[in-house]
Length: 171
Image 1 (cartoon, rainbow, N blue to C red):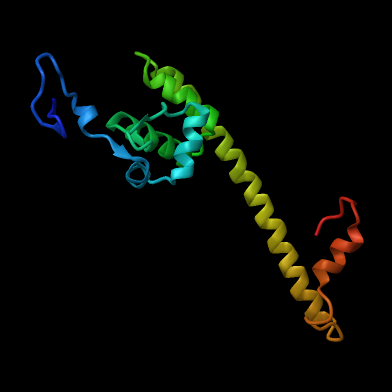
Image 2 (image 1 turned 180 degrees about the horizontal axis):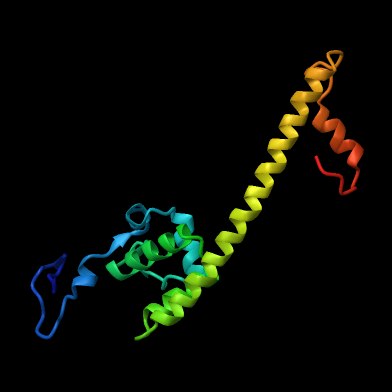
């Protein structure tokens, strides 16, 4: 309640009849603290808001963004979903599904697709590891077999890559 006197304005903690102080409104925090609680940066929060992943924050009288518990939960949800490898578009879908009843089968479908992607990446990384291991082995062998080549003067891998010049020759 605001009480005015001729020279001063006083703000009291008395509530006017019919005024309801919601728990969310009472527990708003500035963007820096919200970022810390959610485990993201302030810039990340602004980016998420720009993309519509997290609803825009109310502003304090001083212009600071204020976040409530629901927004903190959304920020944490987005961070965790990204840690699981979901793209921001997929996170947006998950946020929408979170609001639906009986969305489990749709989420399960997304998980199945994500799991297939991860398995494909693992296969690709295993192939890459084998190629790099072979290149490393070949490099060491060539340096051992040709004592005239010194590490400082020449690198067999760089020479081979130069020679490949766009061909599909294996390392």
